[in-house]
Image (cartoon, rainbow, N blue to C red; front, side):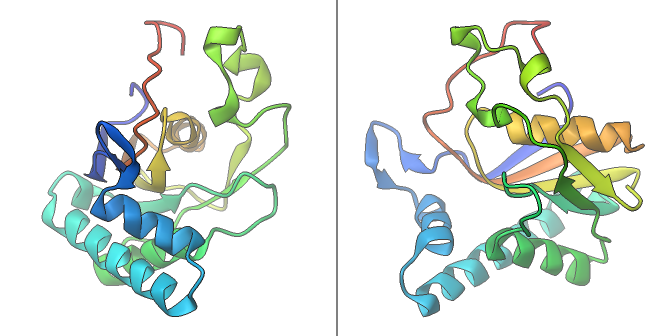
Length: 190
């Protein structure tokens, strides 16, 4: 990913390779944290993922180098971040002393970045370039956190937005990579 200095994953897969019906440990926790029916189980999954993310960043000298943390906002304009990403951002901010960078959805466009299909001729430049906006000040080196990454479009979009706001180095921590994200970009297409 050209826009990010580093993209790290707690688990490279959200589902076990060769078995799309079986989630990995991290993939299962992400699913439970986002969609779990029982509040106690949801909270436990959020806590485990938050502790794992903070520990991973604290132990990684490259990620620990960040001096700001931002989370990928929900697709809907004006919606606050979900409890999973909000918990991780708060923990990173308070436990590691990394201030938050407020990244939100701005204007809406025809398609969400992750729904653009290059194989069908969709042009990412025309559909959505920067619908995210930075509210307030950015930081020099920002760590972007997302729960699942399929093709990397949301992280790519956040990176562009942050760089436009003055960030010089963007790193990303993704909890798990979605196995279906196999589309590749042609050089120079992005």
